[in-house]
Amino acid sequence: MRLMSFTVAGRPSFGAAIGDGVVDLGRRLGGRAASLKAFLAAGPALMAEARAIARPETVDHKLAALRFLPVIPDPGKIVCVGLNYRDHVAEAAGRDVTEKPVIFARFAESQTGHLEPLVKPRASDKLDYEGEMAVIIGTAGRHISEAAALGHVAGYACYNEGSVRDWQRHTHQYTPGKNFAATGGFGPWMVTADEIPDPTRLTLTTRLNGEVVQKSGTDLMIFPIPEVIAYVSTFTPLAPGDVILTGTPGGVGSRRTPPVWLKAGDTVEVEISGIGTLVNTVAAEA
Image (cartoon, rainbow, N blue to C red):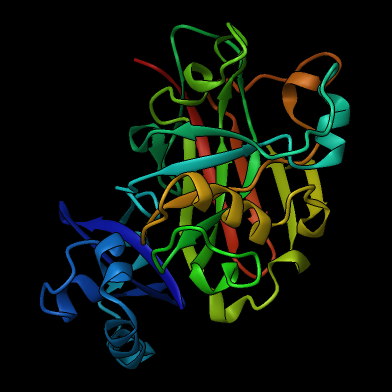
């Protein structure tokens, strides 16, 4: 299934995207889950019920009539992996492959949905794109083994982990540059894990104004998804709706000659085979 969060007529809900429409699971499940995060936490019985409901003949709304929210608008945690593709490590001058994953965090308020603008902040002209694959946790766990890790995954989605580079580099801590409002595009939906049995066999492509600027296979991650889940779950419990961002490949704007920074009017697309395409325009902060 393709599960998404949205608002319709000002009402937030979640549902299953089918063709050019969506089945409103928030309404059809009788309010038993207030959000996609709560739906994932409810467990397999409610998921099975949703699968039975989500059919072409039960579509409630056209996608064109909705406003897309971030796939998980209210994650308890957004855990990000930095420098997780060798070509990105190579282009980041002075950086080496580390023994353990480089981990930092985003806040939920930094996210925005599909077809919503990424906001270039007033404080900087150095907003950069980072196409990534997001992993959404479905089953809670702590000290998860690599062998069991994929069993804790609810699904996968596209993410543009927009980075304000000068603020990211104020110190050796990334947090300020990764958390400006509406710089993290997340969408349009998550594809459930049963439809992606091997997440290492996908292709990630980022386009800026129609031009390919990043392209890589997800098999080229330095720290594969099971290893990342095992590592993260050792220091913090993972819960349904938590999001893990798996890193960006080479080709980011800051490492081009001359650098390429996002500006108002740009369009950025992050496409992952088997998942879909996240589209965001860029707008200047009011």
